Amino acid sequence: MRLLLAARGLHVLVTGDAVVMVELRCGEQVIMTASVAGDGLRWSARAGETVVYDSPAADALPADFPVPDVFADSAMVWAADAVACYATEAERGTDLANVFGGNLGQVLGRAFQAHGITARHDGSVGVSHVEIELPDGTLVHIWDAGHESTGLPAADYIRFGAVHLTPTDGGDARETPIPLTFTGSLWGDLAVLIHAVKNKYDAVS
Image 1 (cartoon, rainbow, N blue to C red):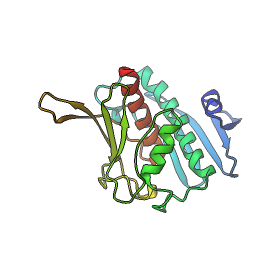
Image 2 (cartoon, rainbow, N blue to C red; image 1 turned 90 degrees about the horizontal axis):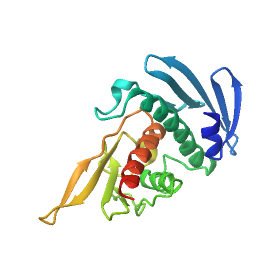
Image 3 (cartoon, rainbow, N blue to C red; image 1 turned 45 degrees about the horizontal axis):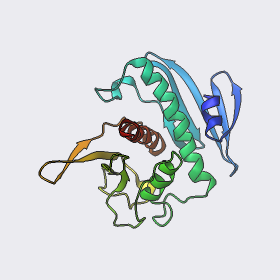
């Protein structure tokens, strides 16, 4: 985990058995702890009272998710990316309750940009989704499925929805839902979403 966090440009200290502390440039600290569960190592991350990440249970995964050892590896990467996403917004001083500067579309845009993927949105209150164009020209649309929007303050986030749009002979786009694992926090769900879209991105590159 220390190597995963350091690779994301974070300052990491190991403070004890299965405890990792990330020091942010804004003075905040994220404390990560690991515990052993029946489905492997589980991670949790907290920044004060903020839940940054909790590993989902294996039975919360989509039915087509790979075998358990892949899940354990994914959960570690999700945890590291959740902390990195949180750190980006905390260090820039984003007010997640403010729709101007802290709306979900803007947070999504910055998170995907850190992975080299452009997520298009106009940042306005009325925008319904964020759009990502894959290398083959097909599109991914992302939104908050609880609000049917991405123009809300990120602090009001409920859960992501995402679809892959592909053309049909009739000219209309076929919408295929992208399976997502829900972790119970914005940052964990954002990490899962990033990797689900990256898998689509890599598959057509």
